[in-house]
Length: 61
Image (tube, rainbow, N blue to C red; front, side, top):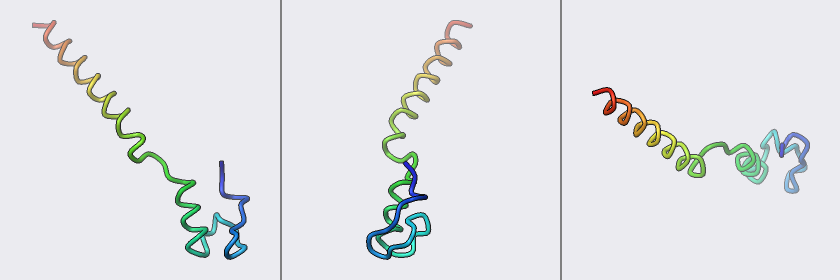
């Protein structure tokens, strides 16, 4: 979903411009990427990669 075509109910301006606090907050919510929801999967992938590297080093010796 994009905020390019949304109109703010408070200031009647495009949400993408963020003219007032209401549409600025809506724009921030819509364009919020990453954050806590992405942290856990990234940490899990990093741990799996680390374990695979340690396993490979152990098998080489």
